[in-house]
Image (cartoon, rainbow, N blue to C red; front, side, top):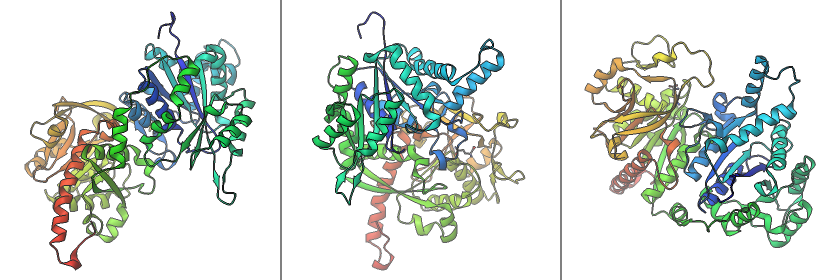
Length: 557
Ligand code: GLN
């Protein structure tokens, strides 16, 4: 941009009517569209809840905790941002009320306010505004900063954030700020109509606090026709051209394409006075076409604790979509509760799948079922990927069933153990606080040449993100290696085992880190890509085997 003094443009995305309309995906899609027009873009989420970060929140409440390179434990929307924008974000890109108040209270205790009464306006709003600008100062001269405000308009705890963005428009000017509001336009079957009233109410609430939205994204089951757009425009004081349909789609990666077809990025650029070329979306379109029309199918079982809560495993699900693109296949995931495996045996569920993934987790519930599932796939040579706790369970299974270390287990679950093959890292022994104290963030991992992991990555050193307290216990390393477990990756000082493999198996890999956090739609994570490739190979053999079996023994394909 050519102004003498660089001025970043601010886009604020708010939501109304109900939560879970896809504000994160909408924000990420806008980011992708602007980036694909050659603009430099950064994106952040401000969450009004009082937790300092979501690291201490139950996945049932909050879904997956998305860990960044710098160890920040963040909202799962940051995962969408990284995936859509293909950028690595940092702690400053996810700010909560808890973090804002923590800073203010520490400052107050130090006496920094020099006797002033500390108030929401201006002290809290000033702190929010300085954090709104932080992404700008730390990222150098970015053209556009997109900020998503969590929650919905009308939430008590969201008020200081809305007040802060209202003040931002005053400070940086109309032409440098854009308010985008995502609402719901439901279809009422008995009336046979899309209804605009909830949107009208939501915008009314925003206007009451001094924010006039510039663009409305209307989530609806079908596109809004011209008359609906006109009506919404009239009642909400927005030109009909700035009323955009956000229809339900099969794949989240279609969303930016839908927005682009309705001229959203042109509209944003003209309102913000950004002159830039049209977007380069060819690679994105190709990726979406692959998702929609794959040539093959594979079925991967996921055995975990939160099998009914797929948001807890968001990045894993997305990683399978990306790996499917590179293998030209649709990855169907079947979710199996570890309790069911305990009750009915692993064979009932795993005989008809092409791979098993055990995700990360905490706590003992379900661990024995996971170990049983791992034993089944190891013995039946079904491709396996274990992530974090999943890798730890694979080590326990191998110790128990191959090395005959009866009752081998992890110190996470029992203190007194004959064979603690997974144990506490030395620097974790004195930790008492739960928040932000695990081994968090990106660490280097050196791969063992000739391992499957090395072939997948195609290089000897990689960087992967972690979130755990426990580790492979090196006291058992020699014994497990002698029995056929391969250490395929470790920390550069060789103290920490990061990847294990069973070379005698077609594809059996366990990783202490979380590869799902680094997978991107246009570049699948190498381990997910190769895992799915192994599952495709296994499926071909399984189906041939099935066809040659007598009718009554055939399993479904
Ligand atoms: N509970 C295990 C640990 O703390 C694994 C953590 C995880 O799977 N993220 O080491």
